[in-house]
Amino acid sequence: MPTRPTDPARSTRERILDAAEERMRTIGLARATTKEIARAANCSEAALYKHFAGKEEIFVHVLKERLPPLNPLLHELNGESAAGDGPEGRRSVEQNLVDIAVSAARFYEQSFPIAASLFAEPKLLRRHDAAMRSLGTGPHKPVEALAGYLRSEREAGRIRPGADPESAAALLLGACNQRAILLSIGGGAEATQPLEEFAAGLVRTLLAGIGPDEAP
Image 1 (cartoon, rainbow, N blue to C red):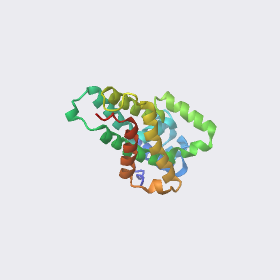
Image 2: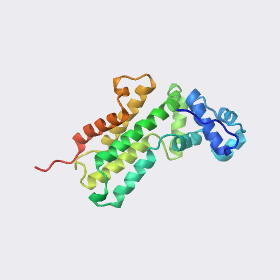
Image 3: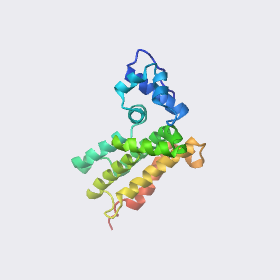
Image 4: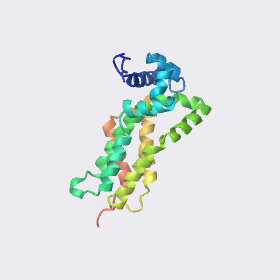
C-alpha cells in the first residue's frame, strides 16, 4: 500500500500519522520510536507530544485512520441488532458475517506487518499490550465486538440457541488473521484464494455449525 508523502501543507497531526504509518511499515513498530517518527514528520518530539501521549496512542490512530475499518463495522452491526429492526429491513446474518470477514482480512493484512516486529522483543510486546489496554483497546476488542453481535443474533433467533458466540467470533477472526500471516510470509494456496471467495466459504462453513435449525 503506497504511503502519503510528508507534505508540509498538511497539519502537524496528519504529518505525524503519515510518517508513523510509513515508519511502522518500513522498519516495524518496535523500531519506530517517537524520535524517528518526529524526524520523518519534519517536526520536533515536543510537537509530537502535543498531539499524542506516546507511540502507542499514535499506533492506535494509525489503525483507526489509515487502515481498512473493522471496529466501526462491528459497532454498526451491534447497533442495528440492538435497535431490533424488523426482519424485512435487516440484512441476513450471512451477509453481515461476509462483510466482517472481508473487512477483518483486509485489516489484519495491513496491520500484521506493522506489529510483527514486536514479537521479537517480549518485554516490548508486554509493555505495548499494557499500553493498549490502558487506552481501552487491543487485539481482543474485535473478538469481543463480534461475539456481542452474534449474541444479539442468537437472542433474535437468527442463529442456533446453543451456539457459542465467543468461539464463533474467534473462529472467524482467527481464520482472517491466519490468512494475513500467510500473505505476509509468502503464503500458500489458501492465501491466494480471492478474498470474497475466502470470506463467503468461511462464513458458510461457520454457519453450518451455528446457523438456526431448519424447520422440519
